[in-house]
Length: 402
Image (cartoon, rainbow, N blue to C red):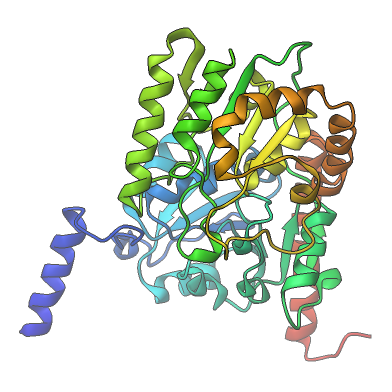
């Protein structure tokens, strides 16, 4: 009786949306999936709640191209996430709460590869499937410490943007064969390059506060208000784009975000807050980027425009690996935040800055534009699926490969 009451209470909590942040609601379609057959050859396993959907959304375009070759189905463990993805895409979306349901779907279905876009703890549910090739994409390429998690060893392959990521994994992850398990594909999400003769619009894009001191890269509290005031006083138009998770875990960062939003909004035509799902239009509109150690800095390299990166105030929050980007672009300390306008002018006027940006773009983004990267993504996924078929045939035949 006590167990049944706990079960009912848990269900009520999930249905009322009273779960702690970051926890999927587990309201699955399991009871209707007993005989369902997944026809798609590619699965995307995304167990997270809606606040992490920014990780998946940026892969919609590339997954749409992969969908043309054998189909793509998305499996999640959160009904709210599924509802949003169904509204935003045409992919088959299933909510699977029970491990045995997932195992049955894999056993009955046509899937050859499973794709993951984040380091969710519940990825382990998908990784139990031995008949699939498991591919990790991540949701951005950056020099953050979390970009080189030891969890990468659980996947058969990890697709990365450029040589910077290869070097990062090789330098940071013990007992890991980077050359064997990494494939360079560029970044399919990159917006088309737009540049202007004059630098008048500065994009300030702080990252979120992070989950621990080693990834506490956000400048929102330390730099935000004085930095934006300095830019406005210097005559720049400020485009403010906070990370989707900024302030979710720490109310100090929520307050700082609101203060910067108010400051930018009060600037009238010379200020705008951008919270759209796609950062591409903001990157195209801006002439200069100020950001933190984050994927925003890597993607911005594709624009071949001036870049400045803040210095975290937490000593443990250092860039991971041999970070050429953070060694070669101007850094803004907390003491310099109030002089950001001057620093931007000096960077724009520096004749050596843009040549360095061009070299960094090649190193971090593989020298591929969005179309080339998308083609590389699809081709690589199909190659891995074919490799899986060959490996599976060998296993089932009982013969060792010749």
